[in-house]
Length: 287
Image 1 (tube, rainbow, N blue to C red):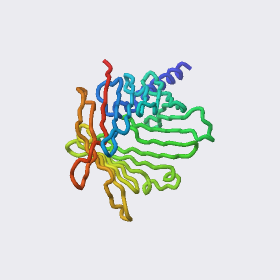
Image 2: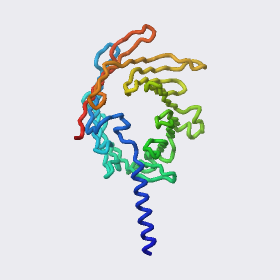
Image 3: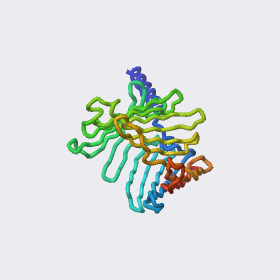
Image 4: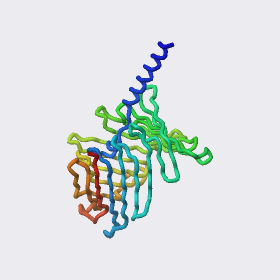
């Protein structure tokens, strides 16, 4: 009996050790933050086509010492727009999320191939009201590889994440409900690709049947350009609808972004058309 008990305890320790080695990427990492950020206050000033301030967004994000979000509050023109409060475990991971009228629980378990499966379930909602259920799989490096979203019993989202040999994300294949149900993932899904250049610059492209969005970044992660295009005709020819360029980019001593300005740009005339948005970030760090 003691022999079996020892074996059980040993297996439990092995499981605990394996589980502790598979942790989702921190929110610091996801948000490309450097240093041990405690709080981040992001203020976005949005302007209309005449250059008049149209809307102000303020998002306050709080992190624990492990790098995961504990609270996030957003205001639009000084009015509360969104509030999310997390309850975290001893590893810093969220185990409960409260979004005002919705509450979600988190469950962590190791898969057969030693990946991490996180199940996020909406609580206190019966099946008739289509409770939300998410299943997110992380690989051994803590990177997201699969994301399923259900509304009630219906699968509405099926995302697959693909990485290169360096561990950099190169493609996200997204399917929505009709794609999954009709098995038309490749034809009708949303495709997101990343292209990395030798000098460290990279390009992110999001594409659907009727539109295409391109984001250009330098090697430091600074957004340089944003191009929104619509596809027309049977051949899907693209036409630029929005072209933005970014300037006045500043970072603090840790390397975190503290300010930038995006301007509307006339591609055909090769000149600025006016301010689009101004960004300001403020940080507090753990000592």
